[in-house]
Length: 145
Image (tube, rainbow, N blue to C red; front, side):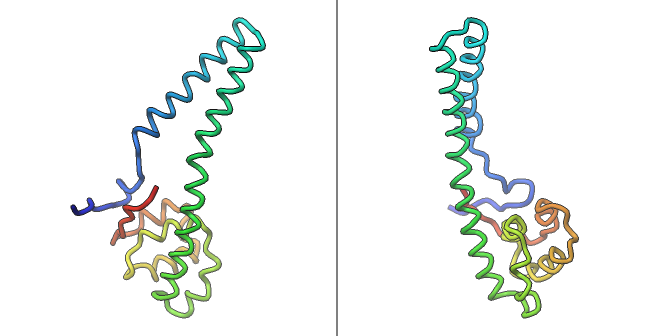
């Protein structure tokens, strides 16, 4: 089965089970326990409210930590790729790129990577999203988390 083509418009991964259901299932009890702790205070109600805050924070960090690891792997992959593709003058400047810039550049095709890297190092892009918008030959990443 072939993967669908990616572009700036559709590259972000949205998982309804996580982004909608899990978030709602963690957030709504927080509201209820918070309401109960304020409307009729008691140690048990405050404890449930504090516990629900902890569960919500755990849900956030359970998503954030793997994304951080994924970004580290992407940085390594892109540095190795740039070693292979970029001309010597740009290769020497790769350490100047931020992690977010490297993550954005991963979508650039091999042919346009040198020019986009040059433009990125010249501060032509205010945000990583601007780098992604400038990509014409999109290199899909279907393995992202």
